[in-house]
Image 1 (cartoon, rainbow, N blue to C red):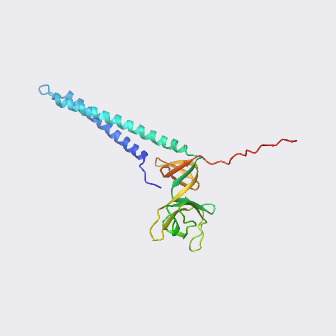
Image 2: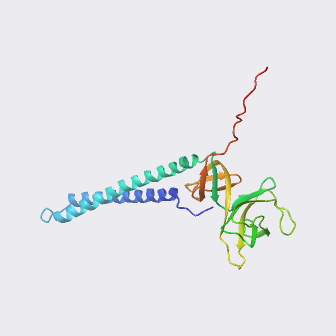
Image 3: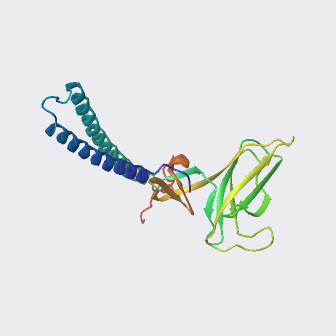
Length: 233
């Protein structure tokens, strides 16, 4: 998963702080009332000091209201995140993401090269970061290409369904210089989920944060036939 600021944790901290401020506010008010009730008539509380105390009390009350507003905003933001992500369902999407699940005997990615490569190697890594398969890229030309891995390891083994694997691209030009590349996940968005208050989308066998999406378009549908229907003679 990705590192993200959790609005749930933030809201919890705000609520805890609000409770502490409320408790301090009540204590402050009680002490101030007791002070006024028991002040020496011959030496009353200085008016400037009294005004300062009232100002502090008002400041505490304002802070409580501010924290309540912040909590409401955080809650609204969390709900809007899922609602906004739901609008992506059914659309064809492209995401900069390299992790996918191996299932039904296959795992698929796309990769993009910034220029024609003299040498380009693909590596499939398991969840621990170990390279389980390595081989020449099927296409070394500039642009976008698809790759499907059948689960066979470099050592001749076969991985089981259910594991999560990532793809890595290493591409070089004729002079041995590195060529920019990126791994992509492409397909139709079939669902959305929330993790730590961050919206994620499901594309094929992958799940990634909405922030990883770089392109969206309406799902392509087969064109309807325009051939006229002939009637019986």
